[in-house]
Each structure stands twice: as structure tokens, then as C-alpha cells.
Image 1: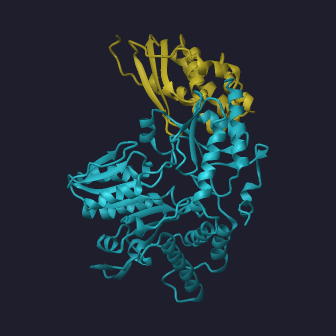
Image 2: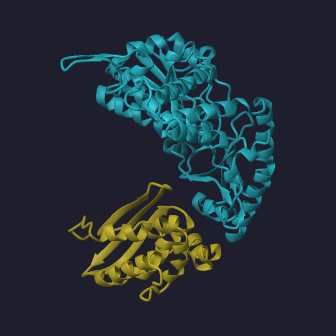
Image 3: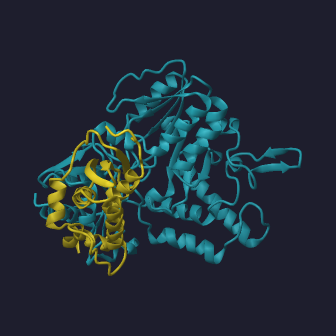
Length: 393
Length: 144
């Protein structure tokens, strides 16, 4: 199939130049099928779910719940009850921090994260630590081998791959070590989900979270996977409609999984769009080997720009390229190449602690999606030469 | 136009900023921060008898924010606080109001091109807002 033709947004000029979208790690563009799926719900069978006993409501409920089955298969979860729809990765982590954290963690317990974390996998734990007296431990950058877990180490929450650098954490090894200490493990798969085949049973993680919009789906959608027994033992996070079994003015009993964690009318059109996105992802040509070649050739092309400094410079990584050029500030680079039609991210990439460790205040990040071609990398490279020209270096 | 944004004078000030460094014996100071891009700036002032006797800054940031800080220090040094406020207001309208001429500005008029890049206005005004905050900071009553 021709991938680019499914993204009509690409058929436009920006500042008189062909649009070159290299910011998929921030959000991926949406294929027609995703937008059409959302549109069909809104225009043809819009109704609330799980409550109406009328035709439209049944149709909407079915469409919504079918996506849960898709997500279960996508992650190889044991049961659909282990799939909770969320507004995104951040919401998923917050749910676990509030519900699991406040029930199972206590003063003196250790929560471990890696140095690569996005702010969304730092701040919820910091707040939890402040509230209940847990201790936040950070695995040093580039650490390999034995982790210093002890009997107080209770939770390991880390990203599968860095949103800033594209490099991987040693996922399997760390999960194994955490399990040997009876720790609970949460994986942030926001960046991995669009590129890596995820299998929660093989990983044996307790929680895994990702966002719909990074896998070509709508913003405001996401998945929290949790092991069924664990989710059953956790109290509800948000409460109200849809998550109840029976309510009296004196007392409420909660619905069973997954409804227990889906209070209120959810993002129905978004979830239905997410289903189309999972289908789209499944239809992409088989990934791993193509990706390796893509990373290596893009890297070679970028290194042709004199003065470029790549960060996270390895070939075994996601197609995310962060760099500096001479001593030109990333914001200047981004402004100038935007005039050439090239969209990248510049700044702290929501990873201020990581950038501090790297000793840089900001980076430029070019990240690839399914629709990018080698011409896009060529366009980036020539735009970077333009930057050098403007800065006379 | 890109050329209006990255003019020679701006690139020069970015590379060789004026009044850069710490200022011993400063009477006023403020820290400026643009969370969007991570630009940081510390501004130090010596204000005596309502005059800006000396001014220096230290900061990390893009060419626009750094050059703007440098050119601002040139504009403000030696001025009274009232004059400085007028210059600040003139600079601000130059960046945000169509047709504004920036007549009170010596060199800072070079930033008129930023108006075409709304997302960069914050870069160009960071130092100026930091100045605004610093002059009312009044941290050291006992002048050193």
C-alpha cells in the first residue's frame, strides 16, 4: 500500500516548501482511516455507551468494546479486562500512581525510575513520594548490570525507549531483576508502541501504558494495561458514572474491570479512531529490519553536516535523532528549517533531568514516522546547511 | 522573512554579547526563564539616584534572546528609570503592534522582523521582562 497517500495532510506547502514532517515522536499524523472512523461515529451512530438500550447506543458500545479486543491482541494481554482506556500515557501513569501507589506503597518504600524518563514518569512519583514518604531512586544514565534493589524497593517504572534520544533501556533485564525482588513493574511504552511489537505476557510487566496519538490515532486516547489480579486489588481512581455497580446515598459498590477504571463518558470517537490506528499499524510492512536500515542511513546522511553532534548515537534505537549544530541554539535551528518546510522539535523535550545529565540546555529532535522517506532526510540535511549559511559557520 | 530575523547585528551580538558576566555590588537582580524553550537569564543592575549605572547579564538561550539581552543593556545603561520604562514600552510595541516604529530605540529596532515570527516574540522579550522585574526587585537597600 502507498502509505503517504493515506496522509493527505502531507500534500501541502509550508512557507512555499514541501511539508517535511519530522516530529512524529511528539505526535504522529493521522491516516484517513482514523479520521473516517471517528467521523462515522459522530455522524452516523453517535450515542452514549454502556447504558442505552437503543440501536445507536448498542452499535456505539459494540464499536468501543471491539477496540478493547483489538488492544488486548495488540499487546497480547490475557484478557480484555486488563485493558483500560485512558486519555493517554500521562493519565495512565497518574492512575497507577494514585490508585496502586496510595494503596500499596508506604513511607520508606523505594520507587525506581531510569535517567531517560519523560517528565510524565517523574512528576507523579515525586508527588507520591512527597505525600506518603516514599523515596525516588534514579538508575544512572548508561547503567548496565546489577541494580541496587533492596527489600524496600517496591516499584520499577521506566520507559521502554527514550523520547529524547530514541535509545532503549535494558527492558527484559531490568524486569527480570525487579521480579527477583518481588517488585511491581510499569513500562512507559509511549515511544516504543509505534515501532516495537509489544507483548505484555512475554515482558511480564505489571503495567504498561501508551498513547493513541503516537500510533497514528487521536489525541486524548491511550491504554493502560494492568495484570488482572493487580487491577482488581486497586481502588478506583476517578469515580462517578459508569464505574459503579450499585449506588445508594449510603454506599456504593464498584463495577468490575475494566469499567471500574473508566468513570464518566469516555472519549468514544477517540477510542473508535484508536481502533483504526491499531489496524493501520498492523498493516504496515514488517518493521524491525527495515527500521535498522532506516536509522543507519539517516544517521549517515546527518553526519554529512559539518559540526553536527548526534546524541544517543547508536544504531539499535528508534528512528529519533537528537542533535546540536555547532553552537547554534536549537530554537534558531528549528525556526530556520521551518522556513524550509521542515518540522522538528526543539527544546528540552520534556526531559529536563536527562538534558542536565547530558550537559545541554536544549536539543533539536527529528523523529520519523511510517510516512517519512529518504527525501525527507535529504530535505532536513539541506535545511541544516541553510542554517549554517544564516549563521555563517 | 528569515533575513529580517537573523540580521548581521543580531548575529554579532549573539556571538559577542555586550555587558556579559556577573556584576559585583549589584543593587537589583532578577531571573528570567522561558519554560517553552528553556532559555534562562540572570540580569544584574546597579541603580543609583534613579539612574541605571551599570547592567550585566548571564544567560543561555537562542540567538534572538541573547542578542536582545545584549542590545537591551546597550540601550538602558546610563538611563533614568523613567527613560528605561519608555524604551521598554517602545520595544514591546515594536514587537507586537503593526506599524510601530520604535523611535526611541537606538539599535533595538533591528528586532522589528521578530513580529513576523510570533512564536519568537517571547525569545526577544525575555531580557526586557526580566529587566522590568529586576528594577522593582529592590533586594538590597544597603548599597554595597
